Image (cartoon, rainbow, N blue to C red; front, side, top):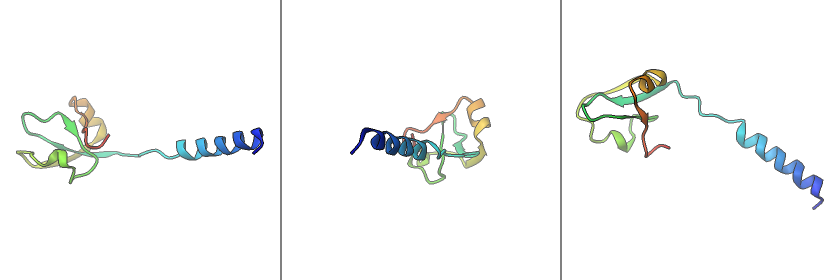
Length: 74
């Protein structure tokens, strides 16, 4: 293959892969005393041991509470 064709296809692949983003506005948190993570899915296995109810909150609120993304979902 010609070098220019490879560069062109590589560029298309790059644009395709970077044009998608995960647009998450709501996440799930546990409000238990040891909870430190947020989750994209309500059935995430990181929420399995939640001792309270599971709440849907805006991602910005979860981050303001000092939560970080669950290790099962990164």
